[in-house]
Figure 1 (cartoon, rainbow, N blue to C red):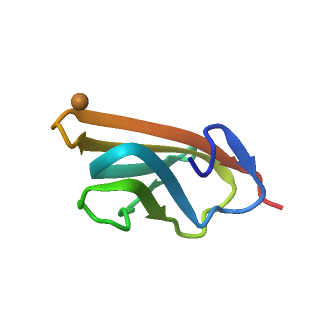
Figure 2 (cartoon, helix red, strand yellow):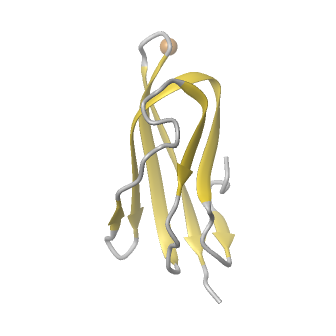
Length: 90
Ligand SMILES: [Cu+2]
């Protein structure tokens, strides 16, 4: 996963990238900041099955962020996950 869960970084990452063990149809993603801001994001693959979730990010201000995804595995099982990261700024 990029960034790693719990990562602290100096600058906004260009994207969130998560590699799956098998193909996943990601249905929704969400990114929420600790100031309550929500970001409207979309996976690069849209809702097509892929073994990599790549979510391009806007330039995010300093703060703590919580990212979540939900999807369906190839066998139809509902899956979800997430990660948290912090941007410290300059
Ligand atoms: Cu399953």
